[in-house]
Length: 154
Image 1: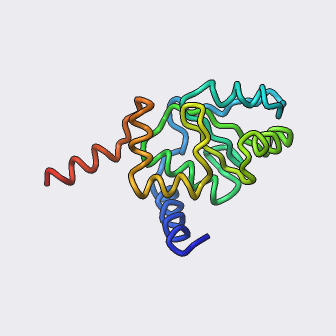
Image 2 (image 1 turned 120 degrees about the vertical axis):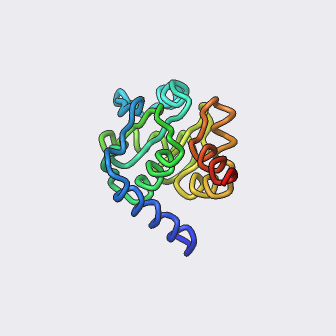
């Protein structure tokens, strides 16, 4: 992990632990993959919800720092309505999603059925404002817009 990426991820990890409360909000669904890593089944999973995330572990207790960072970024933007698939519960899903996206690592994030990337891509999108724009296209308002508006009015 590059220096700035590592510092940003560490800051998000610390923020998440000190913010209090659970990581799951209303609408966050730990979904069952149905036990299939087939391309057809994965296609159905990523098209079922506007925001779909494949993590190592559940969002309330991710099993790797990268998965935790993705959860924290979603939380920072107050994205509350998304599906989560824990690849550690299903080895077929873990291998299948890597082949489906042609991306070798987990976590993986899909917005409106399109593969966005993993932790590094989502973090970069968060930092440069692209994530806010992509969320707007989905009809999801990031709370960071409200925070920016409040800062601008001061």
